[in-house]
Length: 182
View 1 (cartoon, helix red, strand yellow):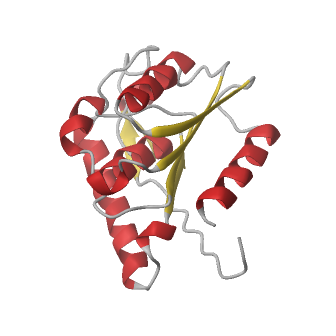
View 2 (tube, one colour):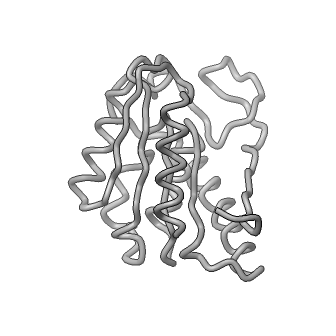
């Protein structure tokens, strides 16, 4: 990476989240009771797709500014990682990669019909904590299996941590970013 690299860190909008008793907080989509039970479950599809559209707008803005789509990595943690997977796997132009941290694949049932040909070989860095109490590792592993079965190149990492990031993960992220942005 060099001094001309650009990083865009969008914030999720403020919205009521059902699992938090309707408390208004930053979220990419609503989460209801039972949505995170440790196996794949459909997320709030309307909210996921709305957030996907917002990330698509950000990508289009950067491309219009002269950034090549093939130099863009979509990354996210938790819900942000879910939206990174949702958007990156379906984006019509080739991207550099997807980084999915402590997350799962939302709306997985539509991926076979919606997967973009341009990103069938996209590198995916997928990391999760073995002690994650927010999104159980079983959800991440099930999502990884869906991606593997669909032929995606997934670089999987698990770390002895909860719903967080650790120093070993940061080192692995750094190495992966260097490799995909070369």
